[in-house]
Image (cartoon, rainbow, N blue to C red):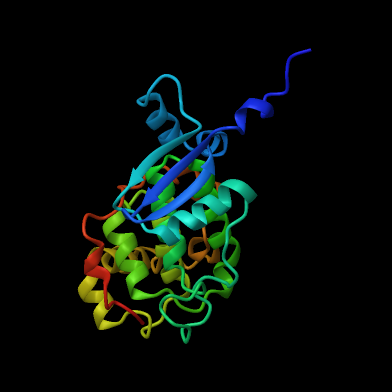
Length: 229
């Protein structure tokens, strides 16, 4: 009978240094199981992996990586509140969809497809209860995801179905004109057909199939500083 794999799989650790200062430690087997990015990174390393291998992620957010690591170990998203349900929450509140979008982008960077799908499922299941989607979330989506991406299409569809004049603020029109243009164009097209089905969300499978179409993280996220509801 072969030896149980977990005896060797969980002896090695990775030290992940995020934003040049925040160290995280994780089992090599956990990260490489979920992410081809980390698997390829280690393939480029020495043939015999040390018990602790260091990986540098200088341009990433420690909070996002913490959520990512938590998901890798538990299989659950670490968010207590409904994304975007309460516009009165502070911009850094977990009720804002923004952290989920940032995690989605990191999942794209690390090729963690299952996490991307989990994020889309989470938002899709809660779309009827979402009251607000912040401007900075829309700007991040517009600048970081291609028009064919499943998450971007899902968020745009929310505006088509639930959006009011109050949601289309001057800041949104200024900061994400392409995003708004797509929404308005869709509304105009759908206005020609008065069937209820046309104004509904597409199936969950539709958005999941398009989860791999991201453009990648925007080059300068500093532009989003100060963009709050």
